[in-house]
Length: 337
Image 1 (tube, rainbow, N blue to C red):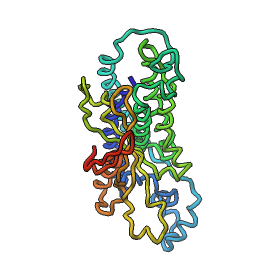
Image 2: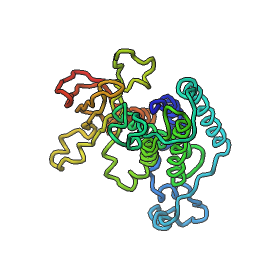
Image 3: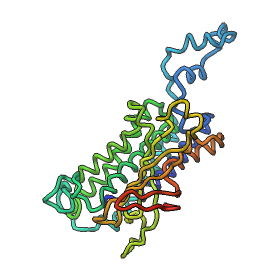
Image 4: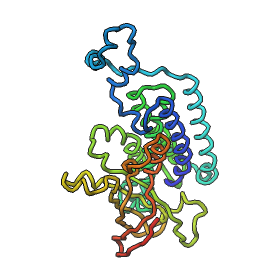
């Protein structure tokens, strides 16, 4: 049941990238993901009423001195865009609900209850290792999906006219509510239930942008996703049920660890990633992989707004390359998806 959110997230993912790119283009930001990095001084200067301070036109530095303590000016709310974005989000939510309802939410209903794990009455509320049929791949999916929603709703909100500070709080809250909707549906079906572990993964993913802002060292880590068809017996017809074909990668910025004398020789875009997967969809063995990874935002070529927007999209995925399997056995792959 925990896998059904992927289709919904993919729809939101591409739609929200469209909004975030529009925001960057309209405000002439050099890259979408750095739109929120301009400090309040720069943005205030951009909208200064110079006519009220004619003496400042002769000394640009004095403009910064006088206005550096001014608060960030709030952009004007675009009511039309806000209504459009809201209606589109509601429509996408309803559209995504229909296939989920037909496939998963037509089973026997019951009263609200919590999910303790596949062993039903003998489990640790879906947190324990033996509570899961899927090696907790589904929990990584919840975290990854909630984070994508949160990050891109941030740009949708700014496109609608909310300022940065409002957007960075409203985005995670909306992401949390959208993911909570799935858990509430689950809670009324006998086969499933409200999973506290899924809920925890949702919250950590939704609020991860705020957590990263408070703990900057976490920005050296990036959770990425890759998929290959597992070709298991009784292969599922859709990839969102094919857990054995999913791999989640924790990509780390090796460049940040290197001494200054070595950094000038090491490409800043080359990361190292630890991959996590399972050997089969249910009750499979854990598989760990080690592979190089690309931080596309550090790739030096392609600095146009369009190309950097594409880099932001690419950075959510791990792309095929050579790879070493660490467990349950050692094996080298020339190409691993």
